[in-house]
Length: 138
Image 1 (tube, one colour):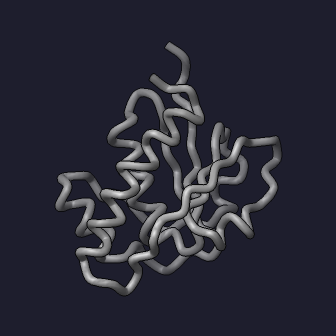
Image 2 (tube, one colour):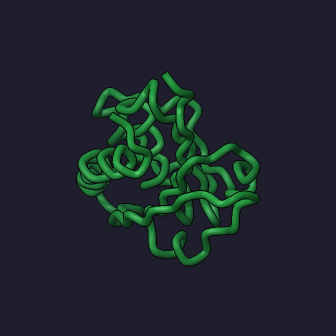
């Protein structure tokens, strides 16, 4: 079995969508893919709704915090996924060529918990298969 692939999930604030995506990918693709997340303009903290939506799905939220893209720039990344249009437009140039896919999701920031749950479910339904296809994971 080959080494885990690393996926960077990039958003603007790294407080909602990219954080939920990081947790979902690390949970459902464990042993195949390791997800990191970062933001182009990180917020001070992960949104309460994102934390609650993940906990409701019995997923761990330990150690989640918004990270700046510069914190992961030198990581060995196999795929970059932008989950918002702004991050797609401002995606930095990495030290080596990295494949990139854009898969936007609704931003639930400031909305009721139900919006976070809907986005969490959408990320699970669309992002996991997209990463499997992009990285040729079984």
